[in-house]
Each structure stands twice: as structure tokens, then as C-alpha cells.
Length: 360
Image 1 (tube, rainbow, N blue to C red):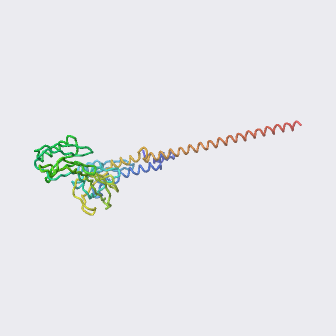
Image 2 (cartoon, helix red, strand yellow; image 1 turned 60 degrees about the vertical axis):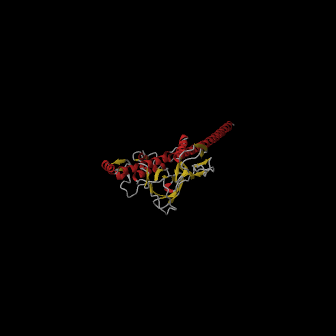
Image 3 (cartoon, one colour; image 1 turned 90 degrees about the horizontal axis):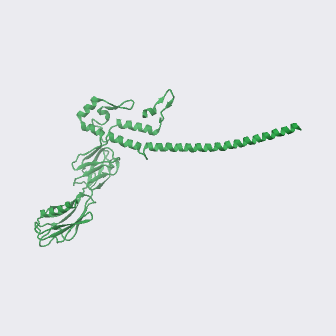
């Protein structure tokens, strides 16, 4: 279709309707460039980095042609590498870092990941718990703005206390659980980050002579911590990121919109320290085409919509000019008719005068 717009017909001495139109030229140029360039996120040293390396090339007419033998060979030798040419794909070298997603702003490539603060759960920790409760005890756990009471009975072991708390949390479908670590009872949230808040209080003092869970009558509260870190691109640029729970999201440069999940507890003070290895993101041909076509065709701000709007504005201006010229012509016509009428009247008077003179 685009080729037809740019073709000049020698017989009729006319070009296509959109010949030279900026949007049409840009669309053709961009589409041809995308299917012939190296795929974003694939290193230039890799064997399969463009469609032509797997046997898909552009003809002089701008059509894709397939070399079956070359494509079959590529599929047999490295199917995953061929997939990367077409798919959006993310991966990480470190098992503690997981690629989650990206945005339309994310540029394909390799990004070093630096973790400067590990994410933490909200965790309320009591004093030493006694092996067997010597009396009844009630714990009040506050989570999500609501209170939940766990009734414990005398004679319960520490493992039974944990079981009773977890049963109550499961019953209310809460993301909270209990465990005993280092001889102390802990109440934790399953999720990480500053959105997590938890508190617990008992009706029995932590140092009661008959023994207790160690929670005590003073409320123990805690808030989770968001992960913090940065990315570094292959050019050495430091890119900012924001944390929410365990999710680290790039906020600048090519890493903008890049999302990884961070399970590590090991951190580095600065980006000059040890990174958590590399995160890779490949933006395949299909995704690049989808984004670009979306930019072209978006109803309000796409290239086509803008150009149509501009053409409509030009047509409106032309219509206004035509209306203005028509109005001026009507005035001039009326003036000429008036002048013609007066001229006729003058001629009639002259004829009358001539007749009178001739008669006399």
C-alpha cells in the first residue's frame, strides 16, 4: 500500500495520493528499519541478532522473504535464541533476582542490579517463650486495621501456641504467621515492605512467674521495609529505581519500567560495590512492531490522528477562505449590477434627450 503511494505513473504524470506525506514516509521507514535492525537487548556478538541471521530478509519491494534452509538450521541449532528475536524475554544471572516485567519505556539491554537495602517483613518479636504455658493467655494481633484475639490455654507447648496462632490467622485468611526463632515467639507478615504493619499484645506480663509467651502487656509493633537499589546500564550510567516490598522498579533511563523481584538479604553500600549480577531484557520484533503501530494508530495522539487533524484543519481553513471569497464576489456582483443598472438608466436618458433634440 505504501509503495503505491510513492509510485510515479509515467503515463498519467501523477504520483500516489500520499506521495511525500511525512507520516507515510515515517511509517515506511520505521517499519523497514525495525525488521532489518538488531533486536533490542541482543548483544552484537551473538550469532542470532537480526531476522537476516535466521534467513528472513527484505526484498527490494519491501517484502519479507524466507530462506527455508537457513531458518531450519537456526531453529535446529538454537531454538531459544530464535525465540528471543520475536518475544519479550527477561532473565537474571542471580537466583535471588527474578525478572517480573517492563513498561513501554523500557529499553532492551543488560542492566547490573545493585541492592542497597533488603526488603523486610513486619515482625513483632517477644521475649523468651516458656516451653509450656502455666496459665491461660490471650494474644491480640492487629493487622490491616483489625484486631484478632487468639485464646491460649494453660499447658500448651510453644509449638501448640504457634499452631493456634497460625490456625486463627488462616481462619481469617490473613497474610500473617507465627514461628519460634531463638527461643522467642515471632509474629510476621507474609508480605514485605512499608505497606505491612503488625502489632501484638498479651494480657499476661512477659516476665510472669507462671511463664508466658513472652509477648507481654506492652504492645509490640513493627512496619516492613521496602527494597532499595539502582541499576547500571551497559554504558556505565547509574539509573534510579524505587522499591515497593520486594519489587524494584527502574525510574530513569533505559531501565524505566523494568521490574525485578529481590529475595536477597545481602546488600552493598554503593553502586561501586558488588552487584547482584545482570538482568537482561530483550524486546522482540513483535513487541517493537506492536508499540510502533500503536504509536501510529492511537485514536487521539497517534501520528495518523495528528495528521488527519491537521488536514481537517487545513480543509476548514480552505472552506473559510472559499466562503470569504464567495461573499466578496457576491458584493462585487451586486455592485456591478448596480453600476450596470445606472449605466442603462443613463443611456435611456441620453436616448430620450436625443429624441427631443431631433424632434425640435
